[in-house]
Image 1 (tube, helix red, strand yellow):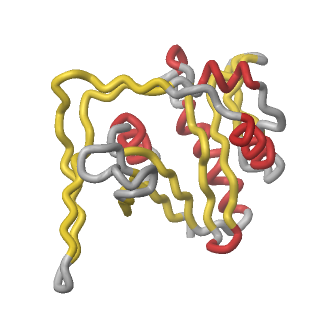
Image 2 (spheres, one colour; image 1 turned 45 degrees about the vertical axis):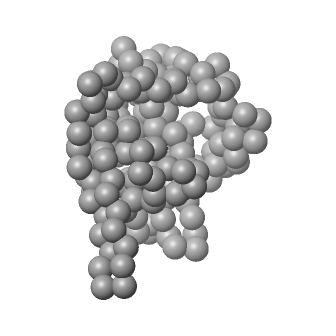
Image 3 (spheres, helix red, strand yellow; image 1 turned 90 degrees about the horizontal axis):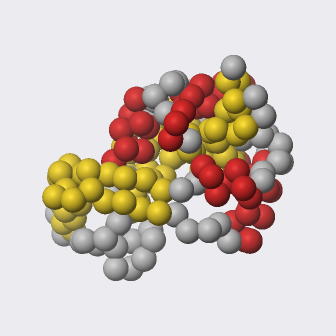
Length: 185
């Protein structure tokens, strides 16, 4: 039986098993026009000739420490099959604008399409609403179409794009950040 509960400690082996990467058969192509009279961003979904396979590298010590600190806020949840962590939603509130930011959100491949992502997000939404949080902001990439599709199924809308969030060379052909948002109030 799989159950969702708050994550209180992170184990590097669990993260290595869950935070592995993704495969996408499409990407969003961003067109950006900026003038005094009009600024526009257009995102167009384009099928790729070859699937994009992205592997995440090892999480560095600073990231692991930041994640451990995020756990202390009480907004991180895991899906457990007995004692095996098979899904994780690691999130942290930002008080200055009353928002919640997931850092990692993953379900192990063999456990996908069983509603675990929804259960994890429902747990975060319930706790965030109880604390009066106004919005959840989920950042992902224009190339991570599976995450964008999952976010939409979970009640998020794509509300913004940042063409230089990762590097100054992101636009026009690189990976750009998109921000999916779900209002809670």
